Amino acid sequence: MTEKLISKRRPALMLDRILTTTSNILLVILTIVVFGEVIMRYVFSSPSNVTSGLTAMIFPWMIFFAAIAVTQNNDHIRVNYFRNKLPAFLQKVVNVITKLIMLFFSIYMVISSYGLVESVMNQAHPILGISRGWLYGSVTVSFLGMGIVLLFQIFDEITSEEEKRGETNDLDYDH
Image (tube, one colour):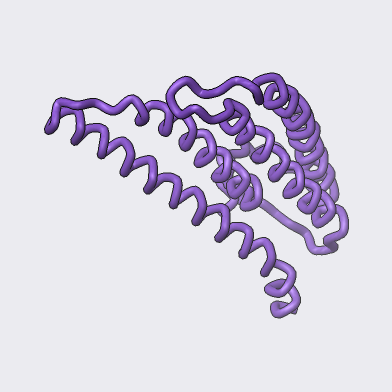
């Protein structure tokens, strides 16, 4: 039974590692860029124009990759007090409805952000000279990733036979 659960979670663990590693790499790059700007500005009295552009480009990608991992691991804060008072079957129903609402929002955000990417694709970032679509594409990629994760979670919630009981805390961090 445990081996089956581990083999079932292996792709999810690999995705989590990839997303977390990517976010961490982007954080390191962002830290180096900002630190370099501080050195250039205060030590050499020669500020760089590229720093603000790189920061504006890297930060959303870092945040949105992390958001996919948060969705996958259910690390977002949920208030579970009332849900935990329900019978196990109704808890499952509430979980599915909650995930469906999140999925609807994710689909809406994918469609909306893709429209935004298309409308700004021909606009170049004034400092970096690359398409602004790269900036707004982070939203599309993120919510697409969250939608896929949510689809798998909904399927797993519907098909799982074991009862999943949350903690009885008002704030459940699902760790």
